[in-house]
Image (cartoon, rainbow, N blue to C red):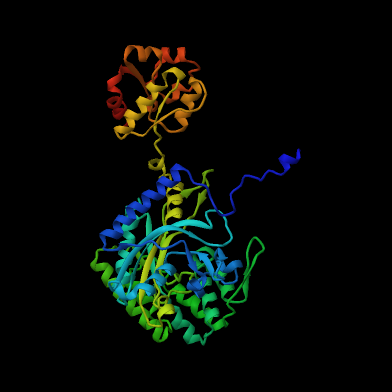
Amino acid sequence: MTDEASNRPEARAPRGFADRRGRDLTAERRIVARVSEVYERWGFEALETPAFEYADALGKFLPDADRPNEGVFALQDDDDQWMALRYDHTAPLARFAAQNWEILPKPFRRYAYGPVWRNEKPGPGRFREFWQCDADTVGSDRPEADAEIIAMGCEGLRAAGLAAGQAVIRVSNRKLFDGLFDAGGITDPMQRLTALRAVDKYDRLGVEGVRLLLGEGRLDESGDYTKGANLPASVIGAIEAFLASAEAPGLSRAGVLDAVSGAALGAAGEEALKELAAIDRALTAMGVSQDDVRFDPTIVRGLEYYTGAVFEAELLLDTKDEKGRAVRFGSIGGGGRYDDLVSRFTGQSTPATGFSFGVSRLASALRAAGRGAEDATRGPVVAIVFSEDDMQHYLDAVSELRAAGIAAELYLGRAGMKAQMKYADRRGAPAAVILGGDEIAAGQVTIKDLDAGRARAAAIADNDAWKAERPGQQTVARDQLVAVVRSIIE
C-alpha cells in the first residue's frame, strides 16, 4: 500500500447517524406534512427553535445523567458558555415560553418538527439523530388539555397512515407511583426515577426483569449490568401487585381505574385517579374509542420532567426486517404532562402537556410493515444524448418539460445508449425522451414509457435493437412531447 493510499480517510458515517435518500426522505416528509395539517386544524401554531440550546436550559431534564456528555452533544462557545444540540423539542419550548411569556396568548398552543440529537449508545433502529413532530399546550392545568392532546395524537396516527387497530395510545399518570413511593417511605428522587425507569421496561423485560431492576440490579444477555433502585422488598411487592391489578384483558378505561383503586395509593394516587377519570370523560365525549386509547399503569415514560398524565403510542402492525424476520418496534411516540419545566426559568408554576411523534421511527416501522410502496420516489424524465451536435435539441426538450411543470433532466454523462437507459431506470424515471438524428430530421420525438417497457429494455444492447424492439415506446410529432409524457406520468 502506498503512503498516499494509507493516508486516505475511510469513507464512513459516524455511529448512530444515517444517510437518507429519496425514499426515506419522502416517507418522513409525508408524515410531517400530514401530522402538521392535523395540528393546525386543531388550532396549534407552528414554532421553530434553534438546533442548539444552552446546556443549563436542558439541565436536570436530560436523560440518563450517567451517560457520557450528559446524553447530549455539547460544545463550548467562545464566551465559555456550553451549548448542546437539542435533545427533544420540549425543553426548547419551555425556554421559549419562559422568554416570551408576557406576549404569548395563554394557553400557548404550538407544534414543532425537525431533527433532535441524543448522545446515546446506538443500536438496531436506535439512532443518535432523528426527527420528531410535537404538539404542546402550555398554560392549562385542565385534564381536558391532556385529553385533547391524546385525541389529536390518535388523529395524527391516522393521518400518518395507520388505520384503526394498527396502533394504540396507552395512558397512565406518574402520580400513581408517587403515591406508592410515599406509602413505602421512598423519598430519594434518584431512587424514585430509577424505579420508574425500571417499570418503563415492563413490556420488554417482564415482571422478573423489572423486579431485579427495582431491587439490586440486572445483568442482561450481553453481560452489561444495570444498577437497580434498591427498593425494600415490601415496596417491590406493592408495585408488582399494582401492575398486576390492571392486567385483566378487555378492561375499559374506567375498568382499569376501578381495578387499581384498591391499592394503597395515598393522596397523590387518588389525585391521579381523578385526573384519569376526567381524561376518560373528555375522550369519550370526543368519540375516542376504548381500542384507540387505553389506560395502562405500566406506562411511566423515562424522562424525569413528567409530573402527571403520561402517554405512549404503540405500533400494533406486524413488522419484518430486510430478511423477513419479525421485529417489534413498540413505541412510535409519546408524551405527557410536565408542569415544572417552564418554572425552572421563571420560578412560577406553569402547567404544560404535549405529545411527540417519532417521525423517523414511524417511517421505518411503516416500511417494515410493507407499507413503503407509496414512498418510492419518482425520478425525472430523462432525455437521452446521442450527439454533441444536437445538444440544443436536447436542452430545448427538457426546458419545455420543466416549463410545463414536469421534472426532467438531460443525461450529462458520457456513456452510450444502453448505459443511459440503465441510468434512467435507476433514477426511477417514468419516461425517456429520444431525439436521434432521424427523429430530429422528421420533426418527431420518441418517448419510451419505462413503466411499460422497463423489463424488456434491460436486454436491449444497442440503438438498432432498441429501434427494432420498441418496448413501451411511441414516436409522435415533436409538438406532442409534453402531452404524451404527461399522459404517461398521470
